[in-house]
Image 1 (cartoon, helix red, strand yellow):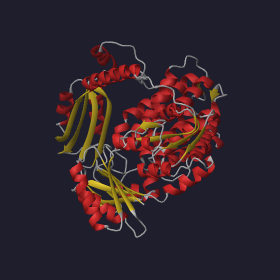
Image 2: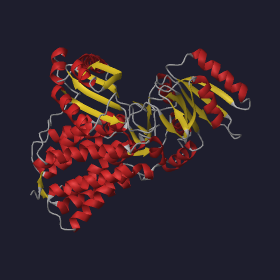
Image 3: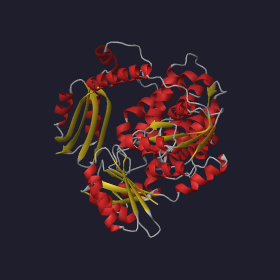
Image 4: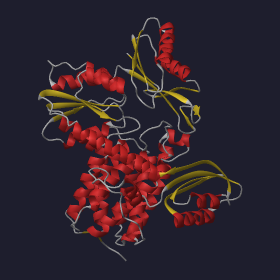
Length: 553
């Protein structure tokens, strides 16, 4: 019976949890209810925990304080997206509780779980049940019960906590109707469970590869072919779906996974009724395909050569480094107030710069900037007070986290959820007003902006009583999906029609990189004809993924 955990074992458990999450990230991404092409939960949580894992791997001392600092600092700075920020806050609270300990007993872990939950709930302005927070709270409640019952066996304790947290996860669809409608559990909660399960495997002494990918920044120059070979053990990312022709029971699933483990890694096998989704990294995709054919026909086959992709990435990194070396940015002149905006798309970034924004963080829906990205931007803006416009609801928490870490400047986060809100906020900044009055005025004004965005669906689902097929166009308003269809102009026009009311006077249309100017002009003419009392402005946004971004005010 094991009664305590020391820093060395906790470090192994943390790294194992990180690796397990990384291996399941695509599966977790697929649990996302909203079918937009975004910075998905699994990806954001993985990037967050891997930032901490790299710091943990570089810690030489095997003491609790050094380990806790590495976990907390790494995850806080690396946090991306709401799920990543919440995960980092769970780690922050947990490590704060144990940093002065040498060994952790059941009671210490129960205290740490409670501190983790308390810290994470405080970080979210409006905590919502049925999410990762609920799963973490369930684990904490069970941990406290076991501690008060006098449990001392950590193996039993951890097993019981994980079992109960899993039960709470299974109940999340009953707490959030949108999960129930989509038939999935909460993706953030599932991500947390994979961290806990990986950590428990390490506690039990299971053989786990704890090596991590090399840090991608500041690498010495080297031969691209040898670097690709060194970094990538299995060269082909192989994905497919098995359309089952016979029963696929739990024994078949275990046997199939064991076979895939013998020829590769990063394995995900998800069975659902008459289909099985498979993901594996291997050097021989044919072997995986041949074995899968025993169970049925295959569809949605996709094989990517990761070594070639890695080489292309390195070429781009080297070009970027060379460009950066030759184009070092001069220090900005000092000013009282500066602005940072998150934006992607040549046209939108130019609009922000034209309005006086000092620094653009490249990012948005598909690429959520990290807290560290925010800190870098804040450092570069040479101003006493820095306003941040996140322009995406999934980036606001990371901005808030950066704000809490800055001590030498005043940082103000205006909670803009869309690009049009960000444009409105900066337009309403008045230099003669105080920082506090500007913050209040800008925050108030963004509530008067209606935003619509048109993108495509990446998976079949049912949301807001609308049946959506992969590849459909979707018009998404501030409160949900307003239109769905197979014609981008019709979907955009229907979305705008749903947004309109008698109080609106201006419609701004920002068209993306995949829309021609001719098609955009055609849409504008249609809007002007349908809503003659409104002024309609058309501007090139150049944004990827979103065909149109609409602002109505």
